[in-house]
Image (cartoon, rainbow, N blue to C red; front, side, top):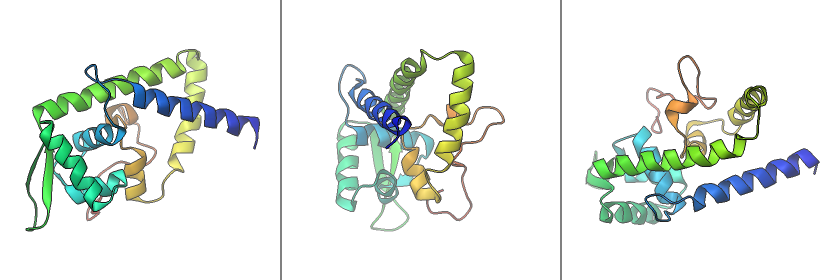
Length: 174
């Protein structure tokens, strides 16, 4: 392993730890719940199964996650396209909490790049754009990678998400 790879691994692990330790509304929140809220903010009215697939959960794991979010008043569950499926939608409280998750994430990440100059930040952004674009080749893995992404920050003005997070006609994960 090279020093670069080792440093990248240490930085990645530390960032992941800081992101999961950041409190939301004065309390800890499990990563799967954070990811569910942010994902549903970007992709409203999805099925429990779709959400579970994006988060890499089993069917029962996705159902339990949605049960917790319903009990907390963060999502509602309604009838889906058929008798077996259920659609999930953020409540007003869920949308507010999702935005707080994004704000907390932004603070952690801003602190991580805070020591860099403007030029270094531009260089890092260019390199990360290149690296992120290779993280997933198909839609579902791309959605997993971006389950906590701030979509507005990723694709401002004329910029595109490196994983092309646009809705694709006919794609069940669009």
